[in-house]
Structures are given as structure tokens and as C-alpha cells.
Amino acid sequence: MSPKITLNAKLSLAIFGLAAIPMLGQKLPPKPERPNILFIAVDDLKPVLGCNGGKIIKTPNIDRLAKKGTLFTMSYCQQAVCGPTRASLLTGTRPDVTKVWDLKTQMREVNPKTLTFPEYLISKGYSTQGLGKIFDPRDVDENLDRPSWSVPFYKEADSYYSKVTGKPSLYYQKPETKALVDKYQKEGEDKGLTKAKLEDYIRARISPSVECIDVPDNAYEDGANALKAKDLLSQLGKKEGPFFLAVGFHKPHLPFVAPKKYWDMYKRDEMPIASYQKAALNSPNIAYHNSSELRRYTDIPPLTSFTDQSVGINLPIDKQKELIHGYYASVSYSDAQIGILLDAIDSLGLSKNTIIVLWGDHGWHLGDHDLWCKHTNFEQATHAPLIFSAAWIKPSVSNSLAEFVDVFPTLCDLSGISIPKNLDGKSLVPAMRNPKTKIKDYAVSQYPRSGEANARLGWDTGKYMGYSIRTERYRYTIWMGNNFRSTQPFNKDWVSAEELYDYKKDPLETVSVINDKKYSSIAGDLRAKMQKFLKSQVKN
Image (cartoon, rainbow, N blue to C red):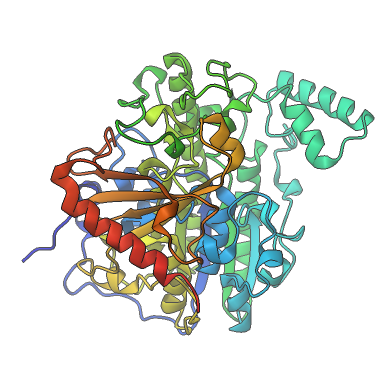
């Protein structure tokens, strides 16, 4: 009998053709004793890629990585915002263990027992190096988590920038924008502003959400970092012993700045605006936000007041299309930089003994539910790309549920090193070896709502945490008040709201069916699963 395959998996198989299906008699290289690891992180990358069935977006390099590896079509982050999701993935533990739920908590200060994957590799004889965005810099020390790196983390790639353009000012290369950035920077410096406050001062005055200008790839940071990473691969490939190289790309994070040639890949009028731009029927306001990250940009019209209780932003269609165009262009730009790394691995003869893992740290709302950015427990924010490639394992597409806490143990398993006992994830290698294997019954995500955010939406000033279970068909979310965390005993009196979505009948999450009598048994089952999960997190 053939395995059950989801729609995403079918689309991927159709795109990949026979190359994505494990072939009988296919000769694979032997597993190396201590394989290298290329660890690629992409900020705000959602699974609209060609390998995920995307019909418009152009991602040939990520697609070819998926074609020779294992694409997990149902992979989910633990919290849809940069700092917490990265801390969770890199430690293999959930946010309630890392205690990183925001963009300011120092990971090792709140949890001195933290063990990161690259730190663990050092103890196993690996050289670990990194550049670009791996950890969120606001949640680690000024050395980008010093214990994780064999050599100091590479913060700059100055010598790799285009000699024609030089480095960007803030994020921008357009001459008029750079001139204004420089002007406001001088003003801020004259006022004696600190580094963080100086950037806020500049951004409040000039920070467009998009930039399309005819410049080379290395006019921007990701292009410069790709060239530096290529040279690092060359150096590491000549040394004795295995290496771990982490390369983090910022795009498609806002602002959507990318060379013009990537914008030219798409037609503005063909950009696919979200078909459902309302709050889901019967859903609680606390599930939403006011797209405040996007509002920080100076070309976003102030259409909805922060003080009213509307959860939407109501962007004009032309601005929606411009932003989606910018997102797609930025994805294609990062895809090209990833291609530089993949080409380097091949040309250096490292493909047979190097594991490659690529992940987007979370998804991104592109207007669905009238939301932009991330910061929710909805599908578009929590669902994110995950691809593993190891030459000694046949290519495949897996629709097994996967979580980002699974990355740490999976890389241990692939590398042939022991898996620490305190991790929250499971190895996905069985699903890589046999696509019919089901690793887990559900994936768990969570998102907090602070008192300030709640007040804007008409809630009281108590602190809430939303926990969400995603099964193959359903998503059940429970909002807990009283500053609850899963490390505390569960108290049903603290339940503030619930949601339930049926993705088979309602893939756009247009209605929460939590109170629909037809779903009472499903709701009961998922409620029990959630309570069992929460109770399992309480450490004696």
C-alpha cells in the first residue's frame, strides 16, 4: 500500500518529479564518521517556496536542496517571533524552559544551565563558526553567545561589500534614503543618544518598508555575508576535523530591500493578496495583534489607531501588493545567496560528508486575517520551512509533524553523536529514512500577550499565554491567564479563551468551531491532549 500523502506533499512530489522519490537500488555514499554541518537560518521565511507548492515564487536553490534532501511539509516553530524561536531551536527546548519569550531577555542569565547545539558540538570535537543572524542579538551576549563558537562570531563582512555602493546606511542603498539616514544619525549623535535609541530616532523619521534599486547582491548585508561564508567554507574544508558553520540570512525580514533584478522576477499586478482578511468568526481578540512591527515603517499609513479595539490594519490593496512583491523579491534574493553556499559545498567536494539543514525561524502573515508580520498562534505564523540533506539518506518528502525543538536531536542523530537527555524534541531521522514514519501526534506553539497589548484590545492588564496544538487536521489553542506558564500546575480556572480550526474544511481559519456541537468530541480530545501536554511540562 502507498503511504497517505498530504496536499503539500503531493504538490512537492509533482514539482520534484521522480528525483524526490526514494529509488530502489539507488547507490548512496556511506555515512561519514563525523560529518560537517552547514546550518542555514532564514529570517521570516514562510513555506510559500517552490518545493512547498508555491506557484509564483522563484526559489530554485532552496528547491534543489529539498530535491536532494528531506522536505518536512508540516514543520512548526515553538513561538512565532525571532528571539524565542531561535533560542528554542538552538537549545532543543521549549520557550517555557529557555524562559525567552521576548526580544530582551538574556538567555543565559535566566537559564544558566543552557546548552546550545553548537556549544555541545564543541565538546564533541567540532569547530563551530557563525555569521549573520543565528541567535537574535537581543537575547544573547555581545559576542552572539560566546560559549557557542570556537572562534569569535563574525559580526561584520565589511570587505565583502560592493566597492561601488559601500555598506548600506541602516538597511538602505537608495541615495536619497541614505542621505536622510545620515542626516538623522548626526542629529541623534549630537543629542547624545545611545546606539539603540539612535536607531529608533532614525527609524522614526526615515524607514521605508521597501527598496528597489539596481545594485549588486553584495550591496546589502546578506550578499556580503554569502561571499564571506563561501570563503569560510573553503577554509574549513581544508582543515582537519569536522566543522559546523551557521549562516543566517536576514531577508525576507522587513524592510523588504533587495536588488532590482529580484523585483523584476515578478509582476506587481500578479501578487496574490490574501483572500480572507477578517478575524475568524467566534475567535477571541487576544488571538490577534495590530501589526505593530509593520507600523514602525514610515511609509505605512496610520489607518487604524493603536487605541481602538480593531485588530486589523486595513492596508490599501496597492500597498498590500507592494509589500507582497517586496516579500517575494526578498525571498528570491536570499535564495540566490543560499545558492552560493550550495555551489561552494559542491565545488569544494564537501557534498558527501556535509549535512545541510535549512530553516525559516517562523512564518509570516501577508494580510490574512488582516494581519501582517508574525506574533500569533495561527498557521501562517507558526508553519515554517524545514529541510535536512544528508547524502547517505535517500531524498524524500515527509508529512510527519515536526517541531523546531527536533532540529537539535536530529542533527545529533545524523552526526552519530549522543543526544542529550534533557531535550524536548525527537530525532526526525526515522522519517527521513522512511517517509511513512510518523514521529509525533501534534506540534506545539505558544505566544504571549502582555498587559499593554491586551489593554489595546480591551482585555484587562493580566498577562496571558496562548498554547496551540497542531495535529494533521486541527489546531486547538487555549489562552491561559494569571501569567501562567507550562512549568506551573494547570488550573482550569485560568482558561480565558479557546479556539479550534478544521483545516480540511476551513484551511483559511475563517471560523473557530470550538463551540460547534458537531466538533464537541474533537474539542474534548484536543483539550485533553493539551492538558496532558501542559501537565507533562511540570518538572518535579
